[in-house]
Image (cartoon, rainbow, N blue to C red; front, side, top):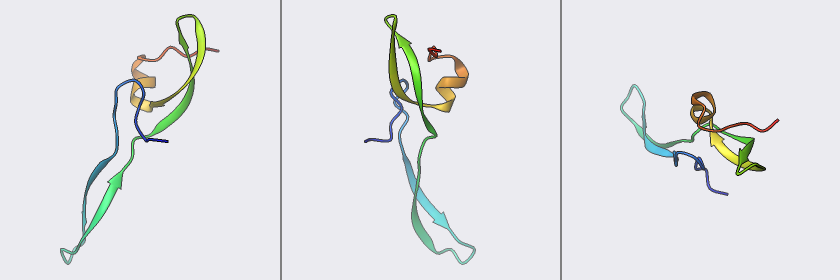
Length: 63
């Protein structure tokens, strides 16, 4: 399963972790994805959505 938000398309970021001695190691920052029961065309659908989309109201939660 890919770690991508189904609403905004936010995905993993990559870069370096740099120590005090300037040693570099690769790192990966993943988005905070949550499974949400959303309403789409009047039906309940399960989506993997980042928390920013949930807080901003881009996803309508189905109770």
